Length: 515
Ligand code: HEM
Ligand SMILES: *[C@@H]1O[C@H](CO)[C@@H](O)[C@H](O)[C@H]1NC(C)=O
Image (cartoon, protein in one colour):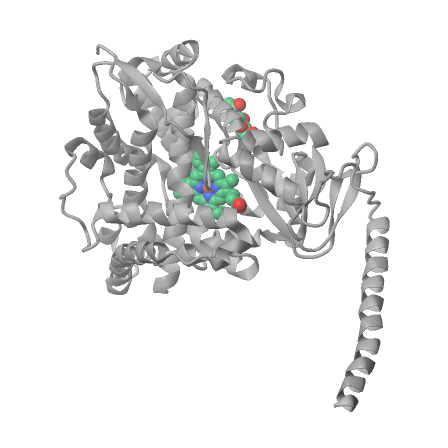
């Protein structure tokens, strides 16, 4: 017994100095690394009442989120502490930045030194598996290489007629007598309908059902379309909840989420199996089999892994659907408050004389593009993001008294970058950045200062898809209605989940054009 204690004492007395030695060596190593890269101390470290865990910082963030001021709260911090600052968040160090060179370093130049935040990955893996949104390194490059050709083969011009049929459903759902309608709700329906048709070749027809208030339409599977939409929506909300909880989410068990997830999977798997059957039955160059573009069938040309197809298709649904709907509703929120801007759009669209625009014509509409850019600037749909350092590395700005020197980034540091706040910097976008002013785009020439779709190797794959869909729908709406009027005196209020849209929707009244 005593001998054992003695042994323990001896090994401890050897072990503890060893740990101290290792720590010290690491410290020296890091100091040398930082010095050789010209790093200086961060210009600002957030002063914390609780210097160990930074609970006050986290608490303030949660309070802001609770009062729908999360984004404003982060913006105020940048005004208070500077455009790049260090802080502590529970047990890990963080750096907050709105400086384009730092963001470029994280997303492009220093891409290899960063990965997705582990909180996001942990929360999303149950639903999205090994899809493009939840992986790094070789698994991610594999996803990217799998998805990219399918996007490349999609011809945007062919997409327009097929959007028109969903637009017709949207028109039926809009009251023509000037009564109030929530466009946000309709836009979420529209993008669900177009996304499901694009992805699986079967639309869930939410808009059609909104008119009928009838949910008994025949479905493609024994899980109904509505059941899929509500299960999928529930899972996404659950994910947001878990991301907010961070490490604490590990303690949570939610059987309803598991059930919802299984229903979503069962629905998707039907389409995956159809795509696989097609793959197996098709001769390599069967001309008849390729009449309609279906994203899932394109993917199934690259892989026959059932689970992988499901993960990727759910990921692209998430990526494409809510984002596009939010951009639309955020833009119409502003259009309804700026009749002069709406009138200018109508002027630009007037050249078409009421007919449907071609893909080329959409691309040439300059003022429309100003409005889109201005919407993505003022209300970026993905307003903030986090990456985690996988090794010791540096950021080019934020160090020294003036913040112009590089700063050291310890392995495990979470770098939070706010596009929302960067898009409000007057040195990049001119004055009154809180106001919606499409005209400011007449003079702007920007690089990493404007980042609605991300940059570097992980840049959004659906940018053209989204811009075309939003442009098309906007042009058609502007053709059909002479004016639009806001029916909600409240200012835009954030509803920030994985993306940001308007909390109270987009309540407007529309006046139909006479022709
Ligand atoms: C207004 C609409 C959209 C916005 C603002 C937007 C924005 C973004 C952003 C910021 C990212 C980077 C996320 C990150 O790396 O953390 C991203 C990635 C992605 N987006 Fe989009 N997106 C939009 C529409 C779409 C559409 C319509 C699709 C597909 C049809 C799509 C497909 C993707 C995919 C697959 C990725 C993952 C890329 C990767 O990680 O390699 N997006 N998007
Ligand atoms: C909108 O922003 C993009 C990205 O910065 C830019 O390439 C494009 O020229 C802008 N469009 C207009 C019409 O200003």
